[in-house]
Length: 125
Image (tube, rainbow, N blue to C red; front, top):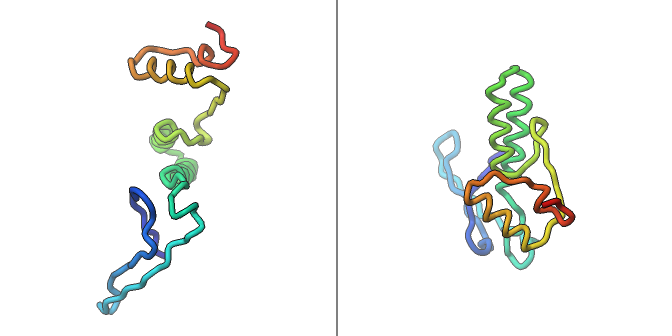
């Protein structure tokens, strides 16, 4: 199997052409119809999260098999960077308002230390 990945801006093209060479040196190409059931040819699937989840799962297995703490650290870093939970991280979800969310994002950008409970709907100031 061949896996091709990349970034797409705007809508998906109707057809993708893959070109390459076979083991005997002969040129090969194949035109593949792009799926049309992705909502008016707009990509709504967060592919970055799909692929990072796959990478996190592979690294987690490798860290477990090899008992490598450095691989666990890499899993944690990827998990936090992309907001994808792993066995080495936890996720906390809470309800908030748009105003409190904007305030929280501003506080994060300024580098201040923040208490998440403050930004929950029933959060304590």
